[in-house]
Amino acid sequence: MSNISYYSEEGLKKLKAELEQLESVERPRVTQAIADARDKGDLSENAEYHAAKEEQSLLELKIAKLKVVVSNARILDESQLDTSKVLIHSIVKIKALANKMEFTYTLVADSETDIKAGKLSVKSPIGKGLLGKKVGDIAEIQVPNGIMKFEILNISR
Image (cartoon, rainbow, N blue to C red):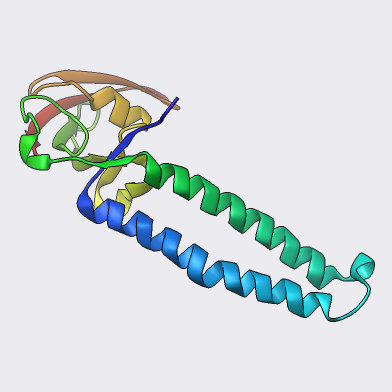
């Protein structure tokens, strides 16, 4: 099963840059650390060697996962987005009915999530609850503390 995710052009560039950094900088650094530790003698009691091998396995796992994400990434043509309902890459302004606070979020793929920058994952509880809603709709979203209700105030791209 492929797990296609939609990204902005900027988001996909960041993913590819991270992958390039891991492959061209981090991988050689870890390989060198293993070689340096191996030169120190008995591998069965060499903590540096075992730590470097552990770091290598974690790095390779991260690289493999990132390659899958990049291979399943698609750039979304934001000019074609329907602003009548909340979709990925929509900018949505919502109001929490409990305290009347207003929030503006851009719904993005998981790896582009940055709450401080107002980028909310479409796979998060709030992101899922907002998808498909229209201006004026009330989204009732199950969160760890119970059900929150948000009114959709505006949708743009």
